[in-house]
Image 1 (cartoon, rainbow, N blue to C red):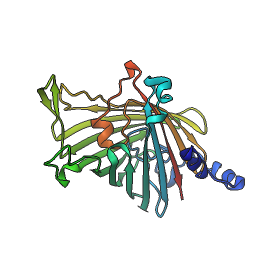
Image 2 (cartoon, rainbow, N blue to C red; image 1 turned 180 degrees about the vertical axis):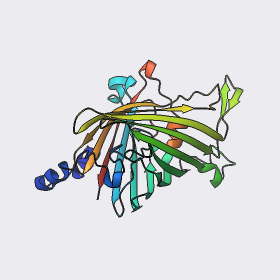
Image 3 (cartoon, rainbow, N blue to C red; image 1 turned 90 degrees about the vertical axis):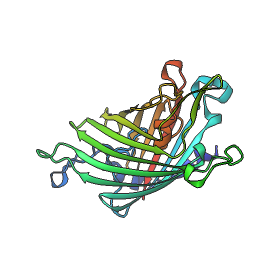
Image 4 (cartoon, helix red, strand yellow; image 1 turned 90 degrees about the horizontal axis):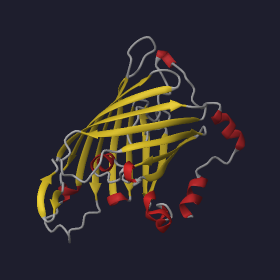
Length: 290
């Protein structure tokens, strides 16, 4: 109940202001011949999009991922096992953002930078290219369970190149080559016999897209193809499908995914759900720009 009240307080209270914001929804401009509105949210679902926060603007994103719906009424379809992530992003310039977040999944803190390298131009360069780098600190690791634990073992890093194209007014697509490095990875056992160990350095390719179905609604999807996962790993490639609802001052994203973790290192490296078994998670991202 508390989180629902908190979310409601983020919505604008002035009808007049809301009407002004609604007039800006999904504008299809090509300012200075640059293609705009490729994506409306900072994330497609799990993967970052090529959208950036404008200069001197501050965006606050509340992300909530409930537990698996396969447990049914016992966990009220996942509501009893929810994970929350709070993310703060600031636009130093139109092409350079900084961000910090905290997720209750592994009690993880994150710092990030996101920067535009190239932009899609009408009748010119066909893609928008954005770099994205993150560092994560896993504070959920307990020294009682890992006596040799050092601070460096809590750290993970990701580097991504986000390459998007707005094909037409309704359809946008993105590729996201990703490098993930974890200073601490787990050995894989089967009946107390070690059968594998995940490499510290990992590589993945993200695929995503957005299709606008009305002025306010779009359907989004993304998939992460892990390229060097250990063959005995219990983890899965993340697949997510959802909807974006634009209300002027904010974007509300609702989705289903097989990863409860929302940071890049967790949804790429630690997704446990299986769509075929119904082991999936419902969640949402709510962003508000100030």
